[in-house]
Image 1 (cartoon, one colour):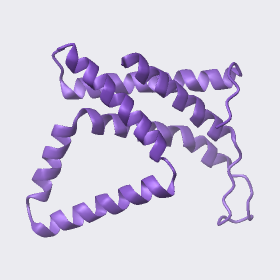
Image 2 (cartoon, rainbow, N blue to C red):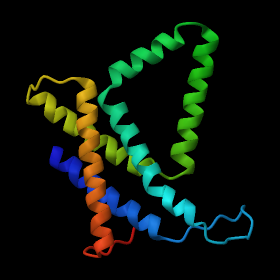
Image 3 (cartoon, one colour):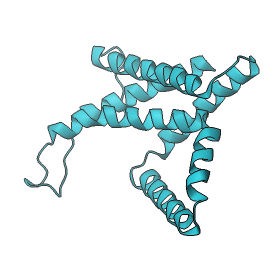
Amino acid sequence: MLLVLLMVSTYLGLNWSSLAAQTVALPWLAGKGQHVVWLQDLIMPLECLQAVAVVVICTVPDLLLREISFFMARSKVLTLVTTLFLMITGVVYLMHLNVLTDVLLLGAAVLLARLDLIRLRLPMNPIGVATGLSALLLTGVWIGQQVHRSGLAPFHP
């Protein structure tokens, strides 16, 4: 399943590289649709940050949920505000930016890799697993980006 995670991350790297290569125009900025080069440079780092966040959430759920529970246990107002903030931010992020498929695909691959590691009965530190899977993921994204740059696989999403 680690090989599946590597293949999924390579596919995502190839996809994100082709998206970054496309022209980005923002109608609300001055110039009415002029090309924004700096936004093209931000696509890959933001997608990689999103991918690492998915890996951390999928590999360290008990530690993450424990910290959120301690924070929310302080008062009912904090619980309500935190829950509303997380839900609204999550829904707007997933629905408006059309990243739901990438997140679901990556989350499934990470959970399958984690299940495979658990089935092998390896002694695992959650932070170490998150670091290792993040490194594997970013390696796959880098491979996909290099394949796109070399022109070996013309990719059109």
